[in-house]
Image 1: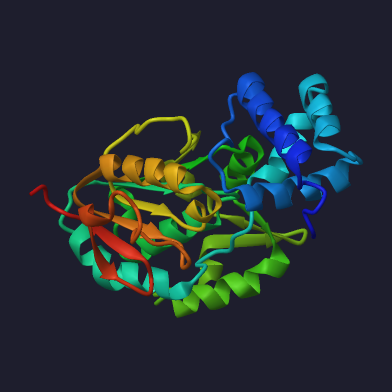
Image 2: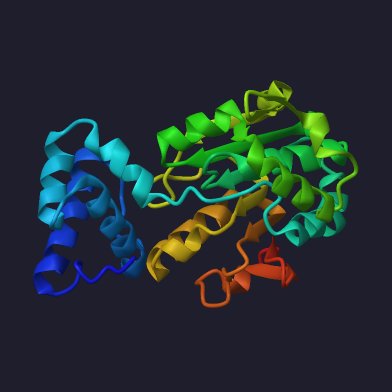
Length: 280
């Protein structure tokens, strides 16, 4: 969809005022998100809510309590699938898991977890590799509704065929069907996974590091940030990672132009896996 309605000097002022209003009232910070991306999302939201201008949208966001949660669904990207980019998970099995086996306990951080597909993918991989029982996964997102969906672990049954194909290509040691039950057109993933997962609200734009972890997976999130916010997020990951910890990014993301590029070694170029370097 075109974002031509959000163009020109007046529209830019309206955009800045809307984003600042959201920050001041709701404490969600979109000020450093990539402009083109947020304009596209807001254009879609304006169509959905029948607003001709961003000023109309801002008025509703400030005065209608139900409006901001609804708008947040447009401002945060909730598109994912289990074992998305299967070779990424295969690289984790082959290049990361052998080193993870040397730790007595493990902590993982899935940043921008959306509706939980990546979280359960990682939990299943750890189970198959015999590491889940000594692992804790922090799953974070700024969207409260997405976190609720993630914690429920329920997905439309029509998506399971794609999930299953991805799982098999990721080097699966079992069948995906072992981890869910099907009922009423939904697949419900095993609740036993949840004792190893902590779901929590966390913003890469405003919040701090909350734990030391061995692995951070943040895929297809940084592409929606401008350069400054990308560096802030990568700085958080670097701070959170233990000595020689691992970072996984999305297929279109890179550390190449980051302020932290020299602080990581690339261990799987195509699959965007990196390892924190030792201090000089």
